[in-house]
View (cartoon, rainbow, N blue to C red):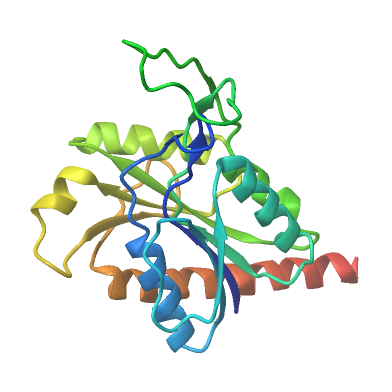
Length: 227
């Protein structure tokens, strides 16, 4: 398969030296890119500027803001070359309403920044591609119980554009032993997820799901062509 993976945090500029960002390291996306490359898939990784880089994935391209990530995703997907997107990047929900050229003064007693909402990228991905595209979203929660997890994942399915959602929780990540990063894999809203321990296991499960989705899409295209 030809796979496009995203990883790491966006940077939403305030001025030429400051930005809003988040705690994502990009490690999961980098590891997924390497593991899927090792399994023979052609992987392109879009990585945030400060994200962990993969060890064995040659095609790595940086992004900065959410708008920059969207532009690069649209350009790559418009070629029709990709079978699937694994959207592990942590995209900022908000950006500063105004960008200041140069550097804001550091002498003021306070600084007020008004933010506006970034448009969601995930629901747009399928429309960027001229052919069927499988999309895997990621959803990070913090200390969420089962009800809150299901609500967060169901909301992502409700926006459309995803075939599966990988959910993880920051509290569980901090509590996990090294290499045992816990995930929950959802293939539909309001269903029980499949627990997955570690990125290696997640890569195998995503490969299985994406292969099945690719077969289903090919079958639908064949039936449409015969009509």
